[in-house]
Length: 71
Image 1 (cartoon, rainbow, N blue to C red):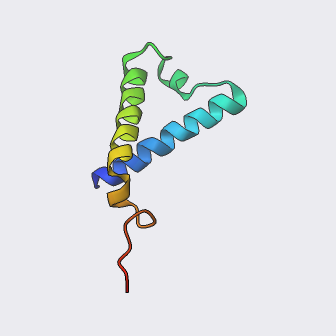
Image 2: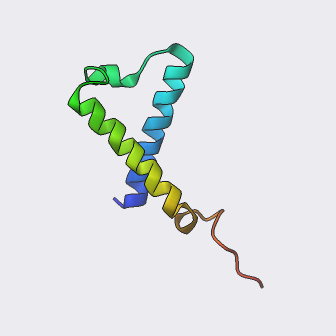
């Protein structure tokens, strides 16, 4: 599995967490014992690192954002 795929999966998890939190006021981190539990904090950090990675590498990985060559 590539780093791009892992980053994508983590960003989807983070996005779904924000969706559930916004719609229902329920944080998915509760499944792992709440925000103060180590596993929840690790997941939050991984999602954040994935977002930072994607900010810096997105143009290189995205077909829609890649520079096009003139024909």
